[in-house]
Image 1: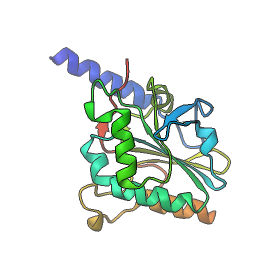
Image 2: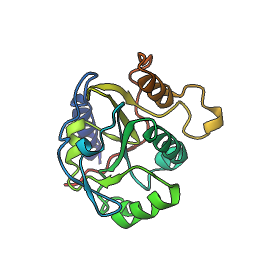
Image 3: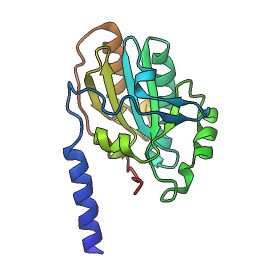
Image 4: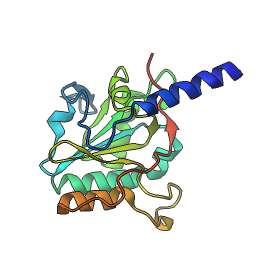
Length: 196
């Protein structure tokens, strides 16, 4: 048991060591991913004139569920303001039964996602980004450079009690052409259940 825990910790640390740094460009941006509508899309396909928001997410994680209304609201709002938005599920549904493609389709419809929700079929996109959590946010500017990485806000349990709105503030600054004040925060959530 101790050995299994040690291996899990080493895997998480190794993945974090490879996390994209500020100023980096999105890796594997030309890889096609299956959207909930059945179409194939890449990160390059969804790039917005103002920037691109990449959200690593899933269906089952309680942190995702708690933040999901806020994710949908921000994604839909900033899609209309010129930010490309894509939500990516890198979880293996064999390890997390609620993360099936059918479950994704249902969730996207229920939450009213106006942006793509795609499958990372081999978890290769998450690995390339160094993403380890759901939800985990990567925001790129119009030039394709990473300008914000981390979490949504400081209170997943209660939207009304949140005092720091990291993602919204970053998106507002990006769209306005201003400097983002808080560029990195700790991603809080469930671990990504990587496919073998």
